[in-house]
Amino acid sequence: MTPTLRAVALGGGHGLHATLTALRRLTPDVTAVVTVADDGGSSGRLRRELGLLPPGDLRQALAALAVAEKGESLWAEVFQHRFGGSGALTGHAVGNLVLAGLFEVLGDPVAALDEARRLLGVSGRVLPMSPEPLEIEAEVSGLDDDGTLRRIRGQVAVASTPGRVERITLRTPKRPGGVPTACDEAVQAVLDAEAVFLGPGSWFSSVIPHLMVPGLHDALLRTEATKIVVLNLVPQPGETAGFSPERHLDVLFQHAPGLRVDAVIADRDSVPAPARLRDAAAGLGAKALLADVADPGREGVHDPDALASCVREALGLSGTEGRKG
Image (tube, helix red, strand yellow):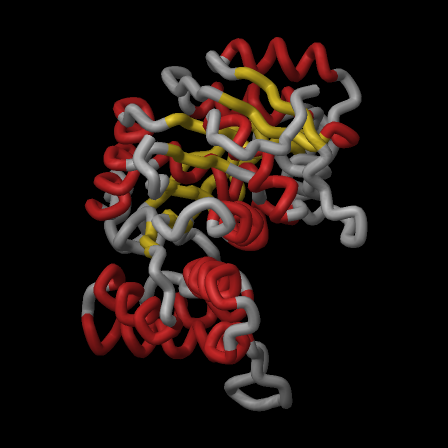
C-alpha cells in the first residue's frame, strides 16, 4: 500500500459518519460514496419540491470529514445547524439548502459537492452513489397473518416497518422501469481504492443499496482493494430487529452473491456467538476481527480511535493496537 492510503467508504447517515471519522485518523485520502434514496425530513422535502438529490446524507459526510480534519469546524457546525420556528424553513439543515442551491446553479451534483468540500476545507471527497435520486422498494414479511410478502416503498417506510425486510430493490422514479445509474466518479474511486468499507449503518436503506446499483456492484467485485465490512453495534428497530451479526452478513451475500470481502469488524460485546460470526465471515472469504470498538460513553456509537485501530489491523498497517477476538 502507498504511504497515503486511498480509502473509500460506502454508506449513509450516522453509520457512514462513524467510518469517515475513523478513516480520517489514518489518511487524508478518503472518498465517501453516499446513498441517494432518502425521502424523509428536510431531504425528502427538498427532493419532492425541487426534484434534486436528497442532500442530507451527503451533508453529513461532508461535515464528518470537516470535523475529523480540523477538530471544531465553524462551517461544519453551520452546515449541520437546523432552523427552528414554525415557518417554511423549520427543520431544514443549512447544509441541505446550500447543497440544493449548488445542485441547481451548477447542474452537476459532483461539481456541487466538490465546491462544497472546498468551502469546508475538506481534502477528502464526497460523491453520490448515483447522479439521480433513487427509491427503495422492499419485500417485507410479517405484516399479514397469512405470511404473504408485501412491497413497501421509500427509505422511511423501510426503516420503520414493523415487519421483517427480506429483500430490497432500487427504483428510478424519474425513469420508470430504468436501471439505476452509478456515479462515474464513484465507480472509479472504488476501482482505484486500496481499501473499501461497507457499513456500519442502516443495513437495508444505507448499506445494501450500493450493491443494487449495477455499476457500483461490478466495481466492488472488480476492485483489487481490501474490502472490509463494519458491523453495527446493535440491530436497528424496524429494519433489522432481531438480526444477529451473522444474519447481517447473510443478507449482504443474498443481495450480492458474488461479493467477497477480506475482513469483518465487529464489537466484541455485540457478538453473542463468535464462532458463528467467524463461519459467516469465512463464507464471504473474510476474517472476523472482534475488538472493543464501541464508545463506552455513548450507546450504539463506535469509538473512532478504537475503530481506526481495528482498521489498521485489518489492513496490516504498522502501529496497530487492535486485538483479534
